[in-house]
Length: 84
Image 1 (cartoon, rainbow, N blue to C red):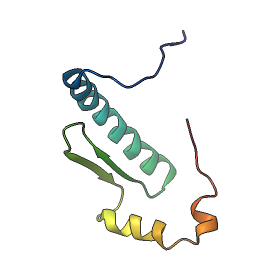
Image 2 (image 1 turned 90 degrees about the vertical axis):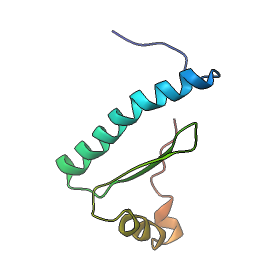
Image 3 (image 1 turned 135 degrees about the vertical axis):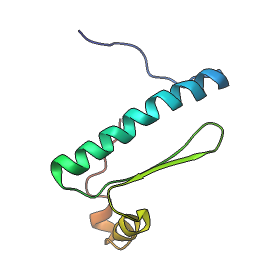
Image 4 (image 1 turned 60 degrees about the horizontal axis):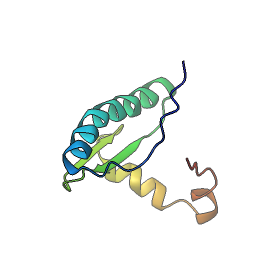
């Protein structure tokens, strides 16, 4: 079964907030899974349509993972970018 639904911005603010709320928990669960299964550091920061922040970090402090990223040389930082 394939889902050929077009991906586009949800214009209705209420629907957008509800969708974000539902998908946020799934996204955080997946971030945790890849962190545990593959023993990798993961940092996730997402801002809801209303401006509230949600975050996940596989370490105790998100700053530690972000600092690791910031300290990478620029050529390494952009080596594996993935765009959809």
